[in-house]
Structures are given as C-alpha cells and as structure tokens.
Image 1 (cartoon, rainbow, N blue to C red):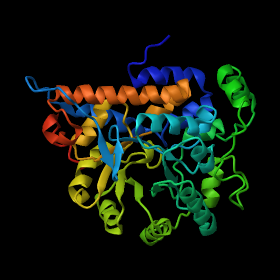
Image 2: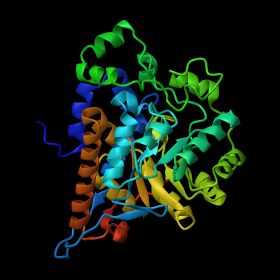
Image 3: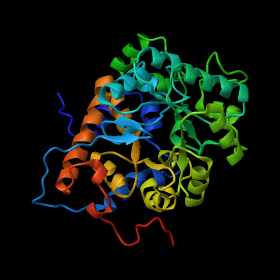
Image 4: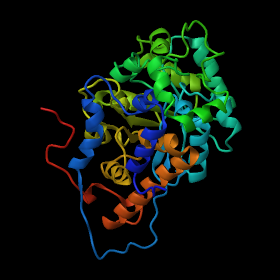
Length: 387
C-alpha cells in the first residue's frame, strides 16, 4: 500500500485509476500549456529563508477567509465534473473539506447538484457561477444556492469564452462519457472506477439538466459554454450579479492590476488571482507572478487570494508570504479524489497542511498570521513586471 507523503503520490494513483478523458480534463491547459506549466514551476524560483534557534512550539496554521474560520488558509476551488473523477465526487470532496475545516466550493458544472451536496453536509459551502446569458436561470441558480444556505458566491469572470484545450477536443469530453471505441477501450482498463459509476445515478450535470432550457447538448462543456455563456460580460454585469446575490462575493479570475482595482471598487469581499489553471489564455503570466503587484494595489481594500499552481504546503506558504490572505487548490485535491475518493481528498489536505506547518516552522514562524515576505528570497525581477 502506497504511503501518501506528497501530492505526487496521489497523482500517480489517480492516473492509473481514472479514464484518460477525465485525467486529461484535469491535467491540461490551453494551447501549448505554457501557462499551465509555469503556474507550478514559477513557485520554484522563490526560495525560503531557513532560520534557527527560534521557538517553534505551539504552532498554528489556523486563519480566516472572508470572516470564516479555517484550519489553514486553503479552500477547495470549484472544479467541474468532480462526479466523473469519482462517483458522487462533489459530495465526497465537500464532506472531506467539512471534516478538515476548510471551505468547499461547488461548481455550476458539477455532477452532483447543489441540493445533493447540501443533503450530505452539515456546514454551509460556497457556490460558483459563470456569467450566463439567461437571467431567469441565473436567478433560479442563485436562489437554489441561497436555499441550500451557501455562505458565499464565487463568480468566475475569466470564462466568457472557452480557451481551446486540445486534449478535451481530441477526447470528446462529455458527462457521461460518450461511448466510442477509444473511450470504451480505455474505460475497460479502469474497472474499479466503472463499478463505482454503475452504483450511482449521478452522471449528468446536476445543476443544469432539468433546470436550464435551450441547451442542445447538456453533456458537453464546450457546447454549454458556446450557447449559454455571456461573451458581452462587462463590469456593470458583474455588479448586477453581485447585487442579485446580495451576500459575500468572491471574484475569481483576476490577473491584472487594473482589473483588480475595478473588482475592489465594486466591493468584492475577496478577489482570486487566477488564470483558470492555465486553461484560458495560454502565454499569460503565472498567478504567483501577478500576486504581489495585485496585493500592493488592492490588498488594503479587499482580501486577495491565490489560485492556480499550488501543489504543496510550501506553495501555500510562499503565496501567504507574498501577501495573499488565502489560497485555493484545484488539481491537488482532484488527484486525491480520483485516487481514493473522500479519503484521498483528506490525504491531499493533510499533506498540504503538514508541509505548510513544518516549512513555516523552519522559516522561524509559529503562526501563519505572522508570515511575511521576510521569509522569502525572491529574484529581483520577480515583481510581476514583464519587459
């Protein structure tokens, strides 16, 4: 039995267990995947200062994100199709997050519905929406989230149109998967995954099927995006959606200082520095490179979080040292979910928290709230400027 000591352990099991279509959906970016790769590799340019002869006793990673107590400054990001990575995957991930003490964010493109997740959890979770054309559907979606006691709305603002993801197009990504000779041949090698899927009725987009009208192929992410997403999105529309919700709002997908300033002016409770995991504009800078200039511009007005590229507790520590008030992980917990279900998500969270705790201590800090840029050694040109 594999001893899980790092996220890479979960990724190896995940790759063996889950069909290629869904592995590729998680583990890919758009076009050449340059931004996807640099989201992680750019963390390596940031070095930590090891300190000695400091009191390392009574450490804590506990923090707050938009006023919510969390076991560490990490939330589970909204990821579509979790229920295809593992049967009833959204429920499993939400339960693991609740037990661990970190927030879970349910994607609009989830397999399990808002109501499914609410039925199987006891604490409020967050809900993510895209900017859609259909106001009636958007209103009903938000009302369903309110009825489920969701405590915050995450509005994705960087996906008016879908970046081209070559692997998804070649695999014919859909939920449930379309049965082609290639997909059948691959799924026949994933017997435990298939048996799990046979044991659940949740195989479609639970928040869309039976709720949205006028979508010709609700099994296809690309079809749904092309038909339902609003390419005319502007800041007035974002403000309208924030007002429609009327509660705490996180804007996800900010990668530019000017955009961050506009988001803060609108009154967002938090903004998420993110390039959608390298799945939208390939060639954009990594999220970690844009974090510090955005913090400097608006960190006094709103909470700034980091998303995209986090694969370890050290990555979380580096983001916090550069001024983030929180982070979100996506692929790191998806690996765990696909590998071992709910227990795998817990494993991912434990790995990240342990590495965060130990690295923080070895940098001479006992409390995550005390972490600052003084623990880092960063190249002089690593300031988010690009010449």
